Image (cartoon, rainbow, N blue to C red):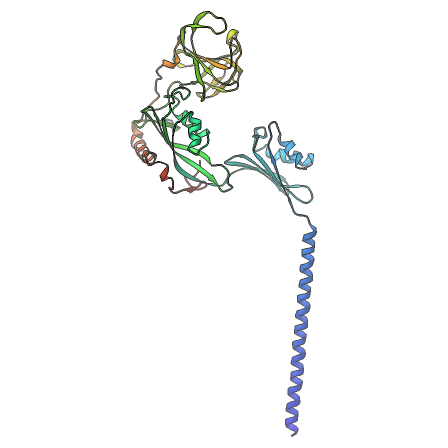
Amino acid sequence: MNRRFIRVAGYVVLGVVLAGASWGIRRAAEKRWAGEVRANNAVMAANAAVPPDTHLESIVGSGTNWSELLQDMGFSNATVYEITQAAQKVFNLRRLRAGNKVLAVRAPNGEPRLVNYRIDPEHELWVTREKEGFHAEVRETPGTVRVVTVAGDVEGSLFDSVIAAGERPDLALRLAEIFAWDMDFNTDTQPGDKFRLVLEKKEFKNGAEPAYGKIMAAEYDNRGHVYQAVLFHDRQGSPAYYSADGKSLQKAFLRSPLRFAARVSSHFSLHRMHPILKIARPHLGTDYAAPVGTPVQSIANGRVTFSGRKGGGGIIVQISHDRGYESFYMHLSRALVRSGQRVEQGQRIGLVGATGLATGPHLDFRLRQHGKFVDFERLKMPPAYPVDKSDWAEFAAARDHWMVQLAAGPEHNAAASKPANEPGGSI
């Protein structure tokens, strides 16, 4: 009896001890949980008390400068100066483009964490705050490069036709530049002409407009006369375009002193009634009607022998070239080169105007060889060197590859794409 009582009493004591221990553990856990909750609430309260960063955006306006943009975002003059000093080490801030965006992140204390400016579709300027000050760099915009085919029919201008094909008008300029030695796109295009291009196209993850890279091959059908071009390299290793039979598309002279969209208002003539003087006299050049400010390009490499105002020609640029040729660009609103300066083929040398004896804005372009003026519109352009014989096999392989894709058309544009940061993927 006593033993049974003792055993039962022991069980009771053990139960009480275990219950007490369990209650203690539970109580400690409750206290620890309550402490964690209080600590978490304190952190949340502290975070709630700190205002978030402010994201700012501004659009570059016409004539707006970099400092004004940052000051309008609320940054102090001292901070703007520091950011500007860092940025101008890697980018010319005078080259801001109207319509481009400037983004900034401002900390709660009013200081900037970063400033971003989109230079062009492929490049961005980043200025970030670091311990020692501000750091600036130009970064390539991430994207994917695809090789695509673009095709269309010409109805109206080539500009409008390229837009109708779903592309930007600057692609029309690129096409015109390729065939500039064989065609004058101011006068030679006709409704019903056809064009095709195989080119690199870089698409961006941020939704920005795609950027055009190299045009690998191109074709333009001008009233049944088909011009073709394949990108290869010349004897010096520089990129150059060749016809399918290996002849260089580059000639001694460009076919026009204006890149695009100008009509010939007056041709070369030995007997023309002068519109102002009202007398018959020779017109020893070609007049191109174009708006004031239209860029004028040098038709060939050369040296500027005169740049300034001269009589009825108004503001004139005169350039000396090889083989005894001289070119004249008259009635300019502004000359962009100086006497003695070397210029390259296609370089901008002035802007269309109406200075001197001119009834309206136009370019009077003249060409003289060995002292005698010649009709530029009827001049046969001497070609440059063809593909070198030692490079023929490489050229033929490139030509055949791109011509196949050119013939395939835009419906085969689902070809493999490649990131721009991979080998062969850069534009």
